[in-house]
Image 1 (cartoon, rainbow, N blue to C red):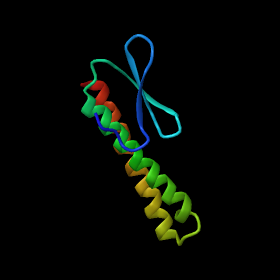
Image 2 (cartoon, rainbow, N blue to C red):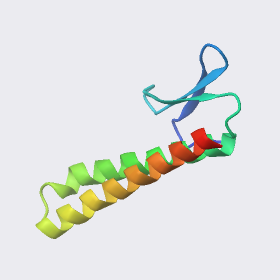
Image 3 (cartoon, rainbow, N blue to C red):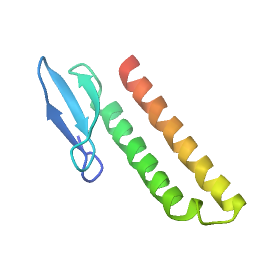
Length: 92
Protein backbone atom coordinates (compact mmCIF):
# COMPACT_ATOMS: atom_id res chain seq x y z
CA UNK A 1 0.00 0.00 0.00
CA UNK A 2 1.30 3.44 -0.91
CA UNK A 3 0.79 6.11 1.73
CA UNK A 4 1.35 9.85 1.37
CA UNK A 5 4.93 10.96 1.85
CA UNK A 6 6.10 10.63 5.44
CA UNK A 7 3.17 8.50 6.65
CA UNK A 8 4.02 5.03 7.92
CA UNK A 9 2.11 1.99 8.99
CA UNK A 10 3.84 0.31 11.92
CA UNK A 11 3.19 -2.89 13.80
CA UNK A 12 1.97 -2.94 17.39
CA UNK A 13 0.84 -5.71 19.72
CA UNK A 14 -2.04 -8.12 19.06
CA UNK A 15 -2.09 -7.71 15.26
CA UNK A 16 -2.69 -3.97 15.44
CA UNK A 17 -1.26 -1.62 12.84
CA UNK A 18 -0.56 1.99 13.81
CA UNK A 19 -0.75 4.76 11.22
CA UNK A 20 1.80 7.47 11.97
CA UNK A 21 2.12 10.99 10.68
CA UNK A 22 5.44 12.35 9.46
CA UNK A 23 7.44 12.89 12.61
CA UNK A 24 6.11 9.75 14.29
CA UNK A 25 2.83 10.98 15.83
CA UNK A 26 0.45 8.01 16.14
CA UNK A 27 -2.69 8.95 14.23
CA UNK A 28 -4.87 5.83 14.35
CA UNK A 29 -4.73 2.12 15.11
CA UNK A 30 -6.25 -0.52 12.85
CA UNK A 31 -6.84 -4.23 13.21
CA UNK A 32 -5.64 -6.66 10.55
CA UNK A 33 -9.08 -6.85 8.92
CA UNK A 34 -9.16 -3.19 7.86
CA UNK A 35 -8.99 -2.65 4.11
CA UNK A 36 -5.62 -1.09 3.19
CA UNK A 37 -7.39 1.28 0.79
CA UNK A 38 -9.34 2.72 3.73
CA UNK A 39 -6.12 3.23 5.69
CA UNK A 40 -4.66 5.08 2.69
CA UNK A 41 -7.76 7.30 2.54
CA UNK A 42 -7.36 8.18 6.23
CA UNK A 43 -3.72 9.15 5.65
CA UNK A 44 -4.61 11.25 2.61
CA UNK A 45 -7.43 13.02 4.44
CA UNK A 46 -5.15 13.74 7.39
CA UNK A 47 -2.49 15.13 5.05
CA UNK A 48 -5.08 17.47 3.52
CA UNK A 49 -6.17 18.54 7.01
CA UNK A 50 -2.58 19.34 8.02
CA UNK A 51 -2.08 21.34 4.82
CA UNK A 52 -5.28 23.32 5.43
CA UNK A 53 -4.26 23.96 9.04
CA UNK A 54 -0.83 25.20 7.96
CA UNK A 55 -2.35 27.62 5.44
CA UNK A 56 -4.82 28.86 8.04
CA UNK A 57 -1.98 29.48 10.49
CA UNK A 58 0.04 31.34 7.85
CA UNK A 59 -2.63 33.46 6.23
CA UNK A 60 -5.85 33.21 8.22
CA UNK A 61 -4.94 35.32 11.22
CA UNK A 62 -3.26 38.22 9.44
CA UNK A 63 -5.66 38.45 6.54
CA UNK A 64 -8.90 40.23 6.03
CA UNK A 65 -12.00 38.77 7.73
CA UNK A 66 -13.28 37.11 4.54
CA UNK A 67 -9.96 35.33 3.92
CA UNK A 68 -9.75 34.27 7.56
CA UNK A 69 -13.25 32.81 7.31
CA UNK A 70 -12.40 30.92 4.11
CA UNK A 71 -9.22 29.42 5.59
CA UNK A 72 -11.06 28.40 8.75
CA UNK A 73 -13.84 26.85 6.65
CA UNK A 74 -11.26 24.88 4.66
CA UNK A 75 -9.80 23.52 7.92
CA UNK A 76 -13.25 22.47 9.15
CA UNK A 77 -14.05 20.76 5.84
CA UNK A 78 -10.71 18.91 5.76
CA UNK A 79 -11.17 17.79 9.38
CA UNK A 80 -14.67 16.52 8.59
CA UNK A 81 -13.36 14.53 5.60
CA UNK A 82 -10.66 13.02 7.81
CA UNK A 83 -13.22 11.96 10.42
CA UNK A 84 -15.50 10.48 7.75
CA UNK A 85 -12.58 8.51 6.28
CA UNK A 86 -11.68 7.24 9.74
CA UNK A 87 -15.29 6.23 10.43
CA UNK A 88 -15.50 4.40 7.10
CA UNK A 89 -12.26 2.52 7.83
CA UNK A 90 -13.55 1.31 11.18
CA UNK A 91 -17.00 0.36 9.88
CA UNK A 92 -15.90 -1.79 6.96
